[in-house]
Image (cartoon, rainbow, N blue to C red; front, side, top):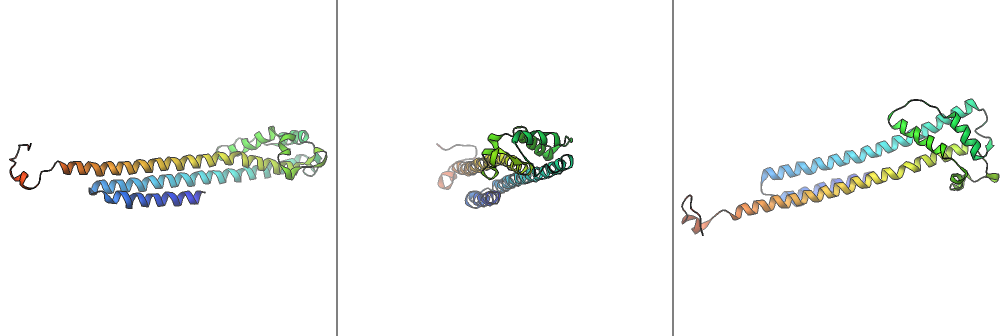
Length: 212
């Protein structure tokens, strides 16, 4: 989606400059509008890419957080990763094993997401994931960690999609405003030209006098 959005923004910028701005007769207005359209496009391309980078970093931190939690469980409770337990037992074990390190930024957000998913972990949640169905409603901690990872990633993905859509819609609105501004500048030039007197009527008009 990010590549497609960047391409669309790039194409719209070209169309704005070659279909609308190019028709402006005033050189200063033409240059200003071209620069405005290019800057607008660059800003939104940077925003699109930034959102995608944050999304990928968050997913990577979630993966790292799950791996660290897995190691912690194995250190404190050897053999627990493969042991079959009910969801409540797994939840308690993971909560005790979850590190309480003070972190900031994206890593802190990832840790909070994982922690939230562990705190909300229940049999109802597990039943929504077909690949984790087990007999007697039991599963291993390893499987539970895989489900927590999936739930964590899936819980944040919609928000990034919404942000991207909002950015794209905002860009389209500003692009439309750019078109309207271009038309306004073009119209303003025409109005100024209408006020100039040419031909025989101009010869009959003395300086400082108005024609009827």
